[in-house]
Length: 192
Image (cartoon, rainbow, N blue to C red; front, side):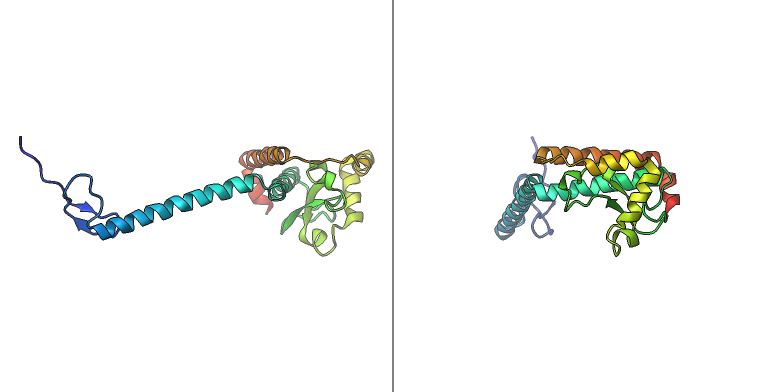
């Protein structure tokens, strides 16, 4: 039986073509083999670091609260846009928008993830004016009624969210945003 000569290979360390001595050889020289081993170890360490970082982020409650807050704010903004509403305080449509809280997160942490407490606000009403609370309240009364606003203001039940609850809330609102964007992509692009 005749043995076929081995085809030239590309060195995994330096990239040069070489003729291997056997079919398992991956590098052209012992120096390249050492370099290739260092590269593999560095790649493995980077992968482990990324995995550890991902696991840490999943266990970090303050970070998860920020991520979840971003998802729920986006969902509230999209909901207002798709229902034809502008800024809750001044009625302006388009431009830079935010998910503004009627009852602030700092003084009412129990209302942080309450969808009813978040409405679309323009930059000027949410930024320089604080939250433009007087006009925000008037907008809520006009949109939903006095009883709705009274119920929102009287909700003082303390809520402590666990990490698992925060992650679940975030996943729910992230999926809701995706669904709203998929179903109403034409309306969202024409609004801006």
